[in-house]
Image (cartoon, rainbow, N blue to C red; front, side, top):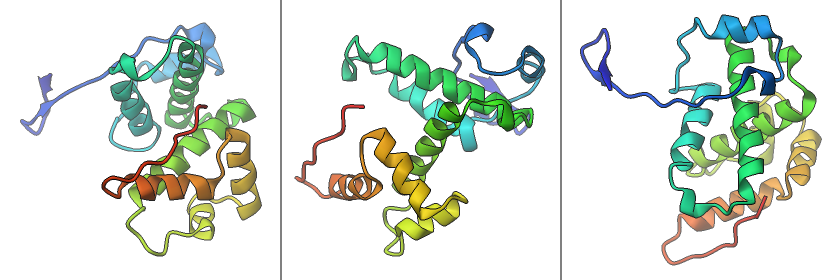
Length: 165
């Protein structure tokens, strides 16, 4: 923890990812090492939240390690691509996984909104409704099931099975 320019203490979280695992040109990765990347918005926020969750390893099984590694690498790649304006260089699969994570975070943040509709979600992410459905069908859980599970998770005493992706 260190003090910032505003006098308030700051905390940090870090992750080491070998450059060879990142799906970006080496020059972009080198450029990103000179940037200050925020954990308060966008890809930085998603990455920080995931890393915080990973501090509780008992929630995961050993087989999950490989899957989680891919997600962390995708998010680090997306964060660097965004910070260096190189989003077009990410593989389509990485962009889709990161978009799905953004949508999950958006849904969680807007669960209280009675106007949270599939159309509103698609519009907020500049995608079509059919692409939204296709994106989540590839993730193994429909977008409507995600919303239902998230809303039921807020009801005291309610249980809803979580997907094992």
